Image (cartoon, rainbow, N blue to C red; front, side):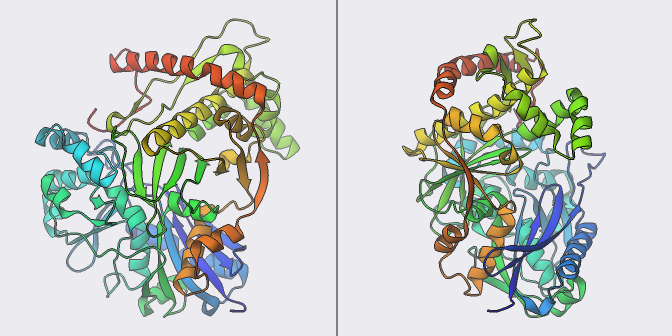
Length: 526
């Protein structure tokens, strides 16, 4: 297929991107637009999704990347989509969007309480079948719409996710567009039977939610529709291009870095950190402490443990305390984090015994995080300078990741022999080394930087027969830029401090539980 390309459209939390790849998996060009999700002043914690404005931004990105690369629309052989997970869109009988919220919408505290009153065991029973609790799923949000916007609820005919919304709009929208949810993102609703990879209407009925609003399910990598005349006119693409079912961002990120086989793992470090571990069953954890999702590959699932805010904590620390480094970086045309990393390398492993509490190890059934804090430092400016505090933040994120590796190992009986580390944190010269030291296994840094978009592009190619075996193709295209291996001395230091860190964090969490300090984050209804 000479001179042909595939396109991935990625609807992330903070921006949307259109990315073009050639058939060898090399990125040809990207166009990106930031978007925001506004809070409805009537409903604190809400995060509304503006489908009209945001569809315009999607089309702008598509047109711009075609112009920038010089790729003709007719050269795009297939399009696939990916997105932030958990966000939902509701449609009426005419096919119009009537309500939508983004992924971390937190308006449904009351509804979580209402669900828990149905039965004290309901959340656990739903988790064991779906892999989800009420913390992030769609159930409390749908119940919120039922309670607070009954007129919208009554008009609702279908519910979907953002990646299938993109295909729906490209295939015609309210003029005959095709709406089909796929398992990797659909499973994050909490209304899926993991093992069957399909909707579980009994879960909806048990939660007093309508069971007649669920569209068909199509597996990732299958053709859902083709670009319609209307979709072509709005996007600048060519009518008739196949639209291939994509998947959730974390799952496609794993495909993009070659984490496609059982017992393989990846860590994606950004605003949130995700630890993903592949399994061959839809089995969940008896303790209900870790999330389980469908993978974007058929007959494959993933344990997922989430760490809240490591990237945001880093940005806060940089902006609050490292103005000098920001000025120096601007003058040297480098990244302030690179300067901070270099200085933090001079601080010994363990940060002179200092600990900090930000994100906790995941406890999905009772998910909350202690108030941010630094502990066990003294007034020695030589030892406890700003780079010691910086290194402690790096170490804290890695300790949380070790906790996640152990959670998954306890649930599955398996741990990976190595991890692939992607996302913005993987650019650091220090963080990957600390991660390797803490986990005690090699950490590989992939060359590809747009892993999620590449995963979507590979599925687009699979849908049209360009890549018959997605596992084989992902492995073939994955290139490792650098491998970090554990420093034995540092690994011993971190292994020795693990139990202490857990006790220290537990004490900090107890303070927040007693309302003496404020949680950094707490799931709705707790």
